[in-house]
Amino acid sequence: MLWRPWVHLPQNIFSALFSVKLDRGNYLLWKSMVLSLLRGHRLDGYILGTKPCPEPFITNERGHQPNPAYEEWVTTDQLLLGWLFNSMTSDIATQLLHCETSQQLWEAVQGLVGAHTRSKITLLKIEFHRTRKGGLKIEEYLNKMKGIADNLTLAGSPISNLDLITQTLSGLDNKYNAIVVQLTDKEELTWIEM
Image (cartoon, rainbow, N blue to C red):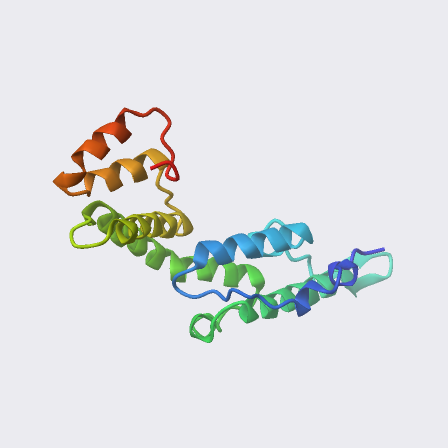
C-alpha cells in the first residue's frame, strides 16, 4: 500500500494558513516555519529534492503501465505548490508563477529573496556600527540597538551578546564613561544586566 501523506495529516496541512506570509523582509522566519511544518509531516523531501518524482510509467508482467506512485507524487507536490504560494504575499507569488513544482518554487524563492537578504544584512550591520546615542534617550538608544541586533538575527546573521554590548557601550556619550568602565569590568555581562 502506498503512503498518502495528505491522508495521514492531522487536520490536513494543506488547509492550514500562515499567519506570517513571505515578503521581502521575513524570508528566514518564513523558511523556518515552512521547514518545521513540512518536516513534521515528512513532506520536506518534495521541496528539498530528496523525494524525487517517480517515473510516470512502469514495466511489469502486464507490460507498460501508468505508475500509481507517480500520480500520487504529482498530486502531493501540486497541493504543496499551491500551499506554498498561499504562504506568500501576492507580490512575491506573482514573481514566481513560472514554477511548476514545489522544489522549483523553493529554489526560486531563495534566489528571489536571497539577494535582498544579503543586502539587508549589509545595511543592518552598517547601521549597527554607526548608531550612536546622540540625542536619543538612553531607553530609545538601547531599544534601537537591540532592535537592529534582533533584525540581524532574523536575517540570518546574529550578533553575539558580547558584540551587542560592546557596540552599544561604544556608542554612548562621554558622560557615560564611568558606567562604561564599570560594565566592561564585569565578566559575563548580559544584555538584561546592562
